[in-house]
Image 1 (cartoon, helix red, strand yellow):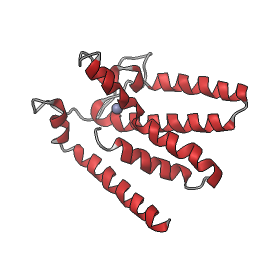
Image 2: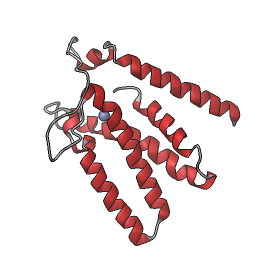
Image 3: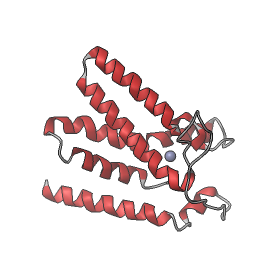
Image 4: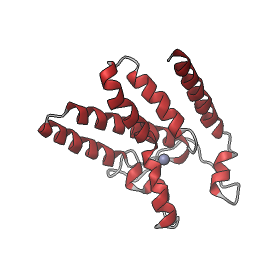
Length: 164
Ligand SMILES: [Zn+2]
């Protein structure tokens, strides 16, 4: 997925805060949206350091087990500090990360069972039909899902703005 992670994160955050008290909304909204795009920050490493030698979905940023461990450690810290705000923000951030991983799964693959298995789960293989791999994804029929998500997020954004 290329362009729809942020719009999907926005939609997810809107759903998350829908029935949440006003005071907690800011603890949930921004961390969820940030989490929904954070795993692809590994593209900086992919291009600048790794120079494309490994698929960026093989980095720790795209491993569910890493995020579960990070959430567990943060919740433990929140318990020690007696900080409900930290616990909520961390859970929301990791919720956004898991939305990202779910959306990456069908067309690019995620190793959901790592370290028990190295198998990458996916539904559709996008063949390399263009010289630059990004165009192969953009001109594949699966990109229509990204467009639908973007349109839905724009519609929700405009409706919320009209209400405010
Ligand atoms: Zn990703």
